View 1 (cartoon, rainbow, N blue to C red):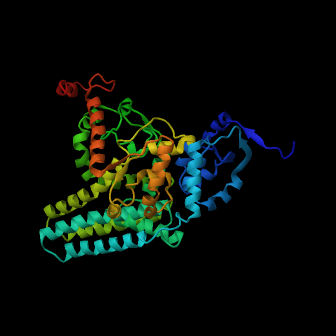
View 2: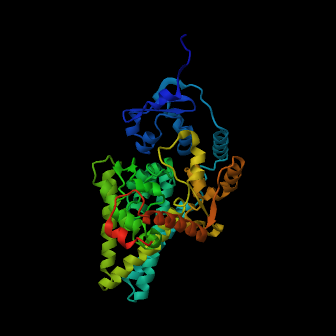
View 3: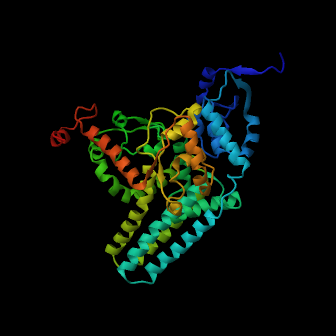
Length: 447
């Protein structure tokens, strides 16, 4: 019997899904990642969310071919019994292989260089507009340019978080800190923490942090049951305040987006000064200190407080275009409750994303993320390749009768507002089983 393969069932594998006891299956081989989870570059959360099941598609999506050699030391000696691959997964894996053979994952073009160059030019314009000009209109223009700078800088940070945009890992990490922490004031560590969880559990109401915006927004009435966030580890209380704010969320959406950066600054500070394990904590804090040195100093050169207020609000308002875009990609897509399932990777990505149709000359403006489905399916694919693979992805969705939604920027906004309004009207229903507030009910008795 020596040398004969040992098997475990899918039900037995599911039992190993807790911290300290994390097993996963990749192409039918079972691995123990309990200790590795703490060292995992993508963080512990993706492994916790997918533990106890086959994760082949997710592993292929996020890891280059060089990662396979590290699996051997984690092999348990077991194989998954009755291991099967769906037709969708077979086609998906075939595409990944084809893209790898043609070098699409390594061909990044000059996007990073051009983006960083444009950021440097815009920063120079901002400095000139504030330091050398006395006109309020020049200051207003500088604020708008600063908003565009933050948008483009964020795209570089996003790219460098998914794949190496620089010549080495060290330079790539430096680019992340500069474009994220130093220039935008938003920690790359916070972004990785939330973004990896978002990709793995795309549009899960209780696992995807990018949908958990109680008390301000709720994209589904299922939030009215006070769901527990498995990401934050706390209950998302649908209390009277949340009911009131969500009842008007379709009206407050754009105003809130104009000041959404305040929340991102707060979330950054809460993470960096928390008890959580944060990779490169000191490096991240230093980058944040750089931002909170140059930005207030820049504002101090404006002549008075009204102009400073105008400058901040204008720069935030311009950057809100990007915040809105991120919401458009997911808010009106399908949602579900529960952990992600490794067996329907492709299906979950198509269900939870929405593309924004635009001309190729606008790719710089959307940072490639208008191809949201393509990005979710192939997160390591450089943004300059996303438009090229879009027709292939569309054909694959059609072949397997899966949704491929692509709307214009205007129609995507309309769809998102409709989703928010639907939930708002449901929140106004006083018969909804949520905490009661008699004053609120009296004011809203007639809708």
